[in-house]
Length: 97
Image (cartoon, rainbow, N blue to C red; front, side):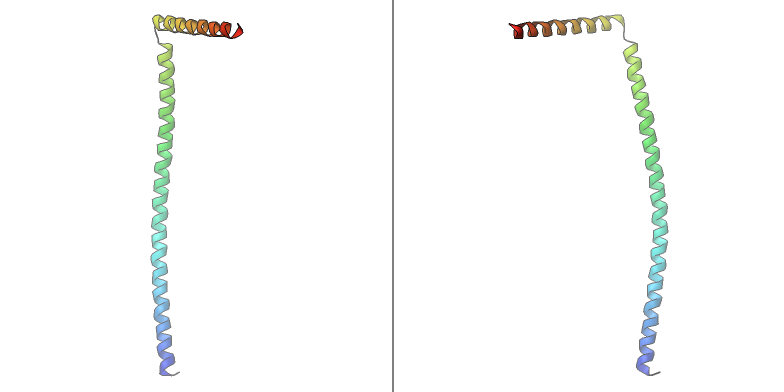
């Protein structure tokens, strides 16, 4: 083997070792990123569950507030609906003329 061939072989071996080290580094980085991704997915799932729970609590609170209204609120709402129905009836009568 000539000196030139020996230099090329040595250079090739050096480059292969360097590529192997880069590959190992990237594999370690990939594992770390996978762990980070798993952690982020777990946090996201926990946040989604929290949102679902809060939404349910909010809907229950709205329902409880609606059911706990006193009689005056119900009467006011009935009067308002009756007034709106009368206005609609007047509008229909005007259209029919």
